[in-house]
Length: 491
Image (cartoon, rainbow, N blue to C red; front, side, top):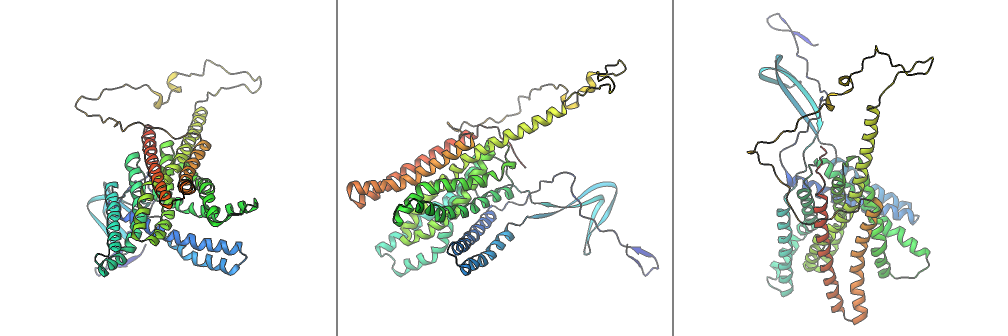
């Protein structure tokens, strides 16, 4: 300890600095509500992830083409985006300082060289560094949907103004000014709205850091899925010797490769969180979030390309994907997540059963010479000795009539996804393939049958409306079905 001699001739010793210790119990401490900050972080991560995926794909193209320079550049330029993502996703640490009144404590506590805490009464001071345990806090779904539909409405008005020539240069300047903000909001706001709906409908208390990790894993699952769709599947088709143009290849990719490859990649991302699952409902939530993360990356590309058709193309693409494709990705993967959650819960229960059997074993004493069981009268074994405190009987009690007990709301009929992992994965692939197949087949058959491009467009529009209604109806029934499961919380 450092000591100094004061002006009065006395020797003074510096107070010891409070050391950082590990808390005895978990301290779930949150922060002040900042829902839009979560949206900002998510938007930043998805933009960085998209650029990272593009450069990594460039690296893979270089490897396949035997061009080391292209491969090197792709990896080199992808590294800064990886570093930025790691920086944003770094663990959020909280410095917790706890002063507990105690007669043998002190009123002064040294925090650092330049900080000292004074308390009006004697206290014992502890300091801990813990990870942020704040609950998931994102904007309400109603606000997000209101923003989204205002976005669509303004886009349609701008499109009408540009088409009719109303406003001239002013309308063109407005379109250029709002282009980038509309793009950012158009691909991200509907995903956040569905994320908010899942949180509100499922009602599971979830740490923000966990939910963001699930969403980020969904984004990462897009990388191997793109590799499968862009390189592996075309190579497999090439081995068959079939000749096909780019349009036919794209259609077969949408119908076969995308449902199989994407659902497997998303399913593996969900399986990475098996330890966090205590039942099908939690697995459903994780699968839903992973699906939304995948949809963020995919939606960014579709919305960006939609501006080729002006604000009309942007409005239609954003609307169809916002109420159809995005929840489709989420609900398809949530089926896989539900089955994985059920499997994880069963495995956990089996492990608990084995542990309980080990604890409940009755040990007997044998004579090492004769091998016979020793049953002497001098060994007293009473029922109270064999019964633990937790196994003691307890009394039921009745709540006073003045206490209002909340009842579960009847939100309508529901169905549960398959509990078998393989069955759920096949169901997810089938739903995905049905969506893509209908989108491809409806205009193709109509065009060949009637020869009218207008009729093909109407058939595509009508089939899309049917698919959207089917996805929303089925998704709502899934949410009702999984809510029948007893709520369990991991915190």
